[in-house]
Image (cartoon, rainbow over all chains, first blue to last red; front, side, top):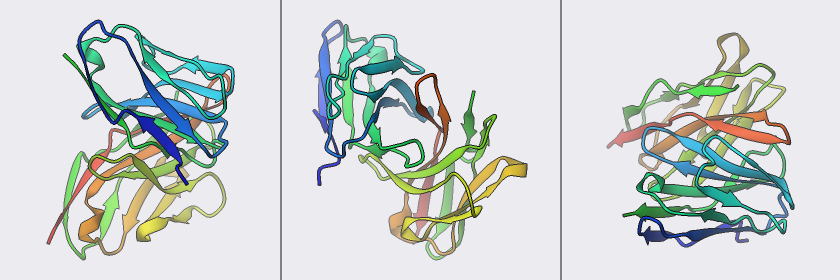
Length: 112
Length: 115
């Protein structure tokens, strides 16, 4: 049982480069979210989705895009990487709000 | 808007001692409340959750938490800490955005365990 799978686990980008962080879940969860984790700031919501074709912005959406073409996949795109986007990114999914989230193991991104 | 505070950034306890991690929340309706644990280099694992019913909830790894509406608190407890409990602990409150559910996380409390 894979749960939530994130790739890559580590990535170094140069300022201005773009990339996509992949997230896939095999639990048929409708809710999926992307968070970033920075020291002393907890987790902050970037974008979220409540089902295929439906996405919305969270607390810190600038510089990121998402799409949800299938229930399973929820990729996060960095359009033009900036050093401020150096962080650990977590994807999470949930069957419902009462269940809490299942988290992936994270992607550690460094922008130089 | 909902918010979560965890007053203690770092707590150190001796192995075998009891533990209480504090969490206070702000939310306009009946909240969904969660505690997560994060071991170094790992994702977050759900310890326990509360959304209705008995205000004392039991979770995995011997943890429990008590919901106190009058104090807007949801403190996490464990009667006897093990060295493997050293990790970071996050309290979270669930709310609703325009379309659905969102979770707001506290800043976390790092737990160190002395042998």
